Length: 190
Image (cartoon, rainbow, N blue to C red; front, side):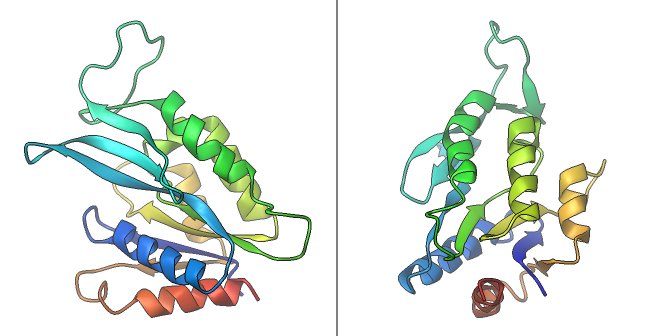
C-alpha cells in the first residue's frame, strides 16, 4: 500500500499546477497540509529563475540566471541558474521539520515540489525528505524529474520505493488525472 505520492514528467508538463490544485482540494476537505512549490520567475517574457513558495504564501529565491555572488565560497549551479541554497533552506526546511502538526494520530500532507537537482544541493533537505519517507504520520505529495543524464540518488530511491505511488504526467492525461492523484493521497492517509 502506498504511503507517499509523487508526480513525474518533463519540465513544463504541469506537475506544479497539478500539485497546487490537489493541495487546494485536500486542504478544503480539512486535511492538514503544508509544504512548498517552485515557481518560474520571468522578466520581459524571459525566464530568469525560480522561487520557492510556501503554501501560506511566503516566497524566497531558489535560483537566478547569472554568475552568482563572487563572495560566495561555493556556487551551486544547474545550467545557467545559480542556486541560492541559504534562501531555499530558510524557507523549505522548517516546513519539512515540522511534519508533526500535533501529538495526535492525525496524519498530515507535506507538499514537496520538487525533489530535483537544485534542491538536492542541500544535504539537510535530503536528510529531511528521507526522514519523512521513513517515518509515519506524514504523507508526501511531491514531484520528481524524469530520469535524464546522471541519476539523482534520492530521486531514484523515491521512484523505486514500493510504498511510493508515482504518477507519470503527460499532455494526454494532465487534465484528467487530478482526482486520481487526490484519491491516492487520501488513501495514504487511511
